[in-house]
Every structure is written in structure tokens, then in C-alpha cells.
Image (tube, rainbow, N blue to C red; front, side, top):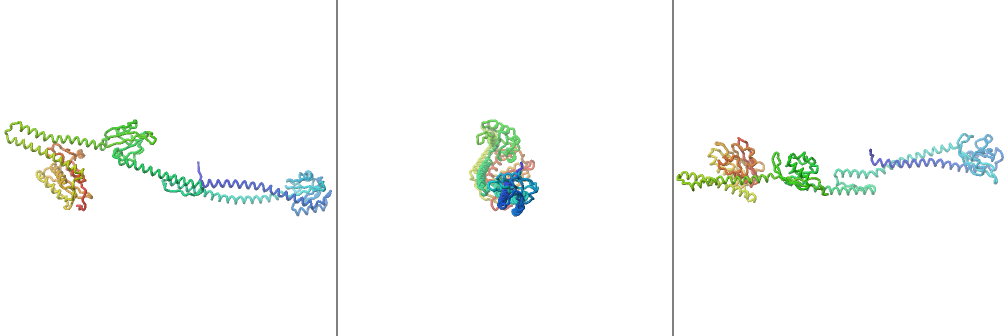
Length: 596
């Protein structure tokens, strides 16, 4: 239905009421004006008749006389009305407008009958003599107790109609002026009523846009002012409640965002109500793009989807552990429970996903470590035991063979000693990093690299491998020199072991932005990508047989990683199979270093 502005509704409402009143008043005035004029004219006619009674009462005879006729004509002109004198027989003996002799008998006239009967007669009717409508008033002229004649006065109603038309025009003009005045007044009143409402409407629109700090002024009538106050109070309460809701929502979102666990809330139909960034990361989706979508549209893993469906179908908590396959396989420990609203009505389920991949990996590393330690220790111990038993139980007269056996035992003992020393070193580094007891001081990095190269020079010379160094002389770093030297030695030692004869190993150091980067590059066979995630684990070997043949303990890179971690740095490798590898140690830069 079409709606109109309140201003025009109020304006036309007032105007319609005012117009109805003006029309009613006009009709009332018009009707009563005629009656008023007729009554006033009747009174004038009666007064004229009374005057005529006094003036011509003595001239009344039983027949018409010139003197009476002259008196009637004179009084008619003076009073501006027609005067007629009628005998009880109905004969007209005097008339101010006509010759009495030519006039018919008037006894049957109603006003004449009433006057001859002693009363006062009044009638409005058509005059056959003058051929027009007239008003008549007749009174009795008495002589003693008898009515001697009737004196009748009259005037033309047409004259009254002309007068009334003029009056009607005046009434219409007055009504028109009043209508204009009422229209203007109605418009002003309507605007006075609507303007505060327009202000309130504008304020309400601002409220709807969230501008709840805006306040409406107290304008207009008491009721409108009270309405503005009520809206202001409502806006203030809404502002407080929205602030509370936003604060609570931010707190909830902050809690969800800071959780290491993935959290997802779904309704009973399986529509995602909310989830945090951790959960989105586990699922490989974006938070804002999956809210409100069905869970089966987002979750493509059957194990997780089945767990969610199982949680929705049960009232008690559900737990499970499963693997999520994807770009990177993850082990998930999932916990599901029902979700209730403030009225304790069940509205869905809350799914908590804990990434147990690291724990699984640590457990695997622990198992591998125990197995590797056992294996690494068992091999030399078994060898030592075998040769010692041979020396004890066999009667070896060949001194050369005995010395060879003892040399093998000595070699295995040295290997055991190296493994134990590396394990003890690794333990000391870890403990120092945890307790933050690793002492750091600003040292010249070139000196550290030269010391490491000097320690590896003999092995490199045996394979005719050149050790090249590139480092600015003034480059300093806040380090533990012996530990960092050990890390670089381990990297150079590995590079020499796995590089071909007559090759070269390049050692470099430079400052890149806010960090120092030490690189050790070899020209070996490179490392397959599958080995990279576990390359820095204890006892992990890419080529186990060759590693043992070369005399490694399997702890070198693990020691490098822990030394660098103790320096609050990081270690990484870039490798190409068949071309070689580059190991990078990245450390925080000391102040004032040259950029190199």
C-alpha cells in the first residue's frame, strides 16, 4: 500500500477538518441569512403596517376614496413598500401600487383572512397583480371592538434574493480567506508536529547505521520529547550491550586464535558455526570462507568427517586419534562433545583437534634414538668382545695377528669413545641452551673459521681437497667461539667426507640484514629430498653403510643444530642431487658489523 509523508497527512487532515467546518458554517450562515432577512423584513412590514394604521385609520370608509389612495401612495413611497387596504368584504379600497378598482377581491388571501379575523397574517406568494413573488404582512385596523379593515404591506422577494446573493458572495469570500488562513495555519502546525518527528526519524536511521553515540534533542510536544528520551535511553543500552557482546566476542576469538588446538563448532545440521585459525590450518582452508558452510563441503577427510558425524549423533563425549592425509600428513587427537545454548538446549557439537604429529614424531625419534644408540654401541662392543674372546681363548702365537686384533679393538674403543663424547657434548649443549648458561661474547668470525679449517686441514689434504674461505676481516659476532668452531668443524668434516678427491669445499660468512650467514658448500652427491626432514636428528644417516665406513658417529649434524639453537640461530640446507649441498648457519648479527 502506498504511504504518504506524515507532513501531508497531518496537513490535509487539518485542512479537511477546517474545510468541513467552513462549509458547514457557510451553509448554516446562508440558510439562516435568508430566514434572518425574511424575519427582519416581516418586522419592517409589520412596523410599516402599524404606521399606516396610525396615519390612515381615519380615512377608512366603506368605499375607495381619492384621499385614502393618495395617502397609500405617499406612505408606500416613504416606506418603500406596497400598502394595500382591504375591507372585511375583501374589497380593496386603497393600494400604493395599483388602482383599487382594477384589483380582484382579496378575501381569500390567507394573510387577509387572518388579519380580518383579528390576528396577524404573513405569507410569501406570487402576486398576480404585479406578476412577481412577494412577502405579505397584514394587520387588523380596529374601530372599537370591530375590525374595520385590514392593512397589508408587502415587498418583492426578488429584491431580497439580490441582497442574499450579495451576502452569499461575502460569505464565500470570507470562507475563501478563512480557508487560505486555515491552510497556512495547518501547514505551520503540521510542520511543527512533523519536524521533531523528522529529527527522531533521522536519529533512528543513524542508530540503525550503528551511530549509537548520537543523541536526539528534546523537541516538540511532551510526548515527542519523551519519545526522544526513550530512544536515547534505548541507544545507550544498545551501545552498552553491543560493546559487551563485541568485547566478549573478541575475548572468545582471542582465546580461540591463541589456542594451539584446532576448534570447530557445528550445528545439528552439520553447518559450521565457527572455527579458529589452527583448525583452518589443519584443514587447509580460510576461516572467513567456510563459516556458514556445510561441514561435508569443507572437510574432505573421511576419518574426520566420520568423527564429526559420530559426535553429532551421540550425547556423550567422543575421542579418537587418526591421520589426516594431505600435503603434509598429520596425526590428530580429536575430542568431540555436545554444544548447548544458554537454555541448555543442544544446538550442535564442539570439535577440538590436537595436532599430535610432533608428539608422534618425538616418540618415533625416541624409539629410533634408543634403537640407533643400541645399534651404534652394540656394533663396536660386539667386535671388541669377539676379538677379546679370541685373544683370551685362542693360543695365538702369531704376534702380528695378535697386534692386528688389538688394533681393531683399539679402533672400536676409539669409536665408542667418540660416540660417548659426542653424546656428552650434545647433552651439555642442550642443558646449556635450556638453562641459558651458554656464554656469548663478540668474536672475530674469520678467526673462528680459520681455526675450524685448521682442524680439518689434515683430512682434506688426504683427499687433496682445497678448503676455501671468504669472510670480511672485520666481521664480528656474539658467539661462543669453541661451540661455533665445533659446529663449523662438523660441517667441514662432512663436506670433506662426501666430496670427491681433488675437489674443493668453500666456507663463507657475510652479513645479510640483521643476521650473519655462514655457508659450507661441497661438491658431493647431494641429498635426496626425503631425507631432509630428519637430516638433523641423532644417529640419522642418509647412507648408513658409507657413513660407518667413513667413521662418523651419526651425531655431527645433531650437534650442529643444537649449537646453533643455543646461539638463537637456525641451520638449513640447500641441496641438489648429483651436484652437492650448501649448509647455512644463520645467527643474529652483532651491532656495528660491516655489510661485507
